[in-house]
Length: 171
Image (cartoon, rainbow, N blue to C red; front, top):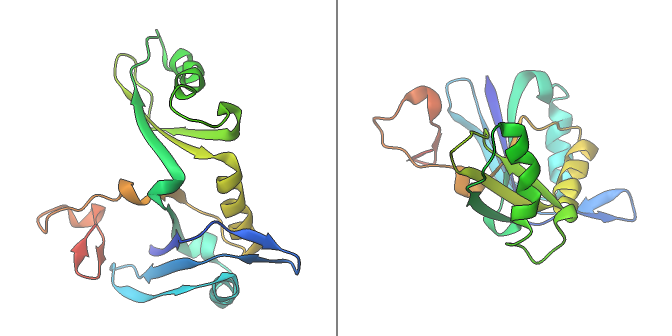
């Protein structure tokens, strides 16, 4: 399946004339993971790109990349008998690590496992909401949203199915 990567460089800010002030980088890979195109643009440029193919959701995996400085990444050891109890406790633990109100945070976790540390990404709901509203405005629905720091470099011997070659670097 083809893949569209969209990396936010700035937080999308709505403008009065039904548009957004935003800077993004983008790249498109074909089924063989060959780079088809890439560039950097503003809201109008991404809308022009999305007009070229109105079947993004069916023809492409769409990965949204957010800058690391928009999020706090931490790990918590949470006592609990099941994943639901641990998940309910996470906002109270996160409150200790951030200066903003925990109700204003989106807490994304990996799979919660009893007796193991839980990795958490904390991001302001307002930032995430602006990004998702901008993508919706452009007619793009994300397959996944991840932080740049979650991209791991692998060796050339890595499984080809789980890595992508971007500009000569295996990701």
